[in-house]
Amino acid sequence: MPSLQEQKNLAAAELTQLAEEGAPTAELARALKLAGEQDEATQAEALEAFWREAVVAQEQLHTAYAEPSTLAEIHAARPDGPRRLPLADGDMLQDRMLGAWLGRCAGCMLGKPVEGWTRANIAKLLQAGDAYPLDDYFPPLDELPEGLKWHPSYHECLRGNITHGARDDDTDYTILGLHILEAHGPQFEPRHVAQEWLLRLPYHKTYTAERVAYRNLVNDVWPPDSAVVMNPYREWIGAQIRADGFGYCAAGGPERAADFAWRDASISHTKNGIYGEMFFAALIAACLAMDDLTAAIEVALSEIPANCRLAEAVRDMLVWCGAGPWEATWEQVMAKYGHYHPVHTINNACLVLLGLLHAGGDFTQAISLAVMGGLDTDCNGATAGSVLGALLGAQALPGKWTAPLGDTLHSAIDGFNVNRISDLAQRSVEMAEKVLS
Image (cartoon, rainbow, N blue to C red; front, side, top):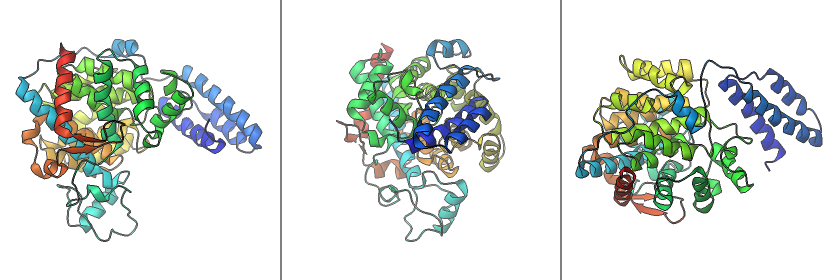
């Protein structure tokens, strides 16, 4: 059970989450404020009552959006679309799969040093290092501009210091997704995902929604309840960053990729938290079979509810990125979606799409713009790199991004601590062939 202070923090975050979903929160806010003025025993009782009322508020939700969380309801709410696409020959799939893995690793490494920074602070750092606009890994600076501080794991991700893909949750989950399919097959269930977390994923390498869900699992609260019990982070980015392994292994099958992603996301997320993983898994699966990014985005949109907030945001990006500089698009994103937490699904998905759609097929531009936009920079760089790497293939990726990785990726996943990136790509191809058959 979380400590009393942590329960209060979770309750405060729950008020924000409910408001974003469209629920009335005034009465709950007053009750929480009054609870904070009581002794500890009374506070504990009041917090239990708060969470019961929060469930009621979700059940009584009235909103203009249709945002279900069960797979059957999501299928019923999605647009028509191609559920399966023809794949190119085996050599092309091999190249694209390796490109996707390398792109994800490079984009993640690019964004790690400035994770959580604002666009303004990233620009300030780059200008101090005579490296603006970004077009390579961040330069090593002896002294940062006043008020700026690298992310704790920055050193091994700076230009000239990189010898391998550093351990990060954005790639841990990619490896784990591949393993789940290898271990349990294409018919795996949410409970299999939960069991693999408990067996292979260290608790202290989980964050926000994943940590809440992990704690629920340890307390014998299983999916789908593990996603909702005291979890105010259920629409944050955690599931979205877990999409890639499932997209890789469902190459050419956007529907199958989205279904895999739902089984994974539903142990820790609801609504748009789930849709983020479904959308990007479907997009990657489509990019492994298509040559047109915008067409692939439309395919991915057909796997999530047509009238959800994420679909609205994706449609906005398709319009906003059609003309003008990327900075103007960024301003539009912040004006409409900047109220979300910096690690929410929707605003970060917008920045991934900003990088992809303004890049014009240029890998360097895609990951650099996704990172220069700020927010969850390692997640956004990784996802943009994965998508465009899948579309372009490994041979088209600039060596300045891929060569420093040394074909090596470290992870915190038990049994997979040091990996050859080329081996991961080959295993993904083999799994994709099994899924297709």
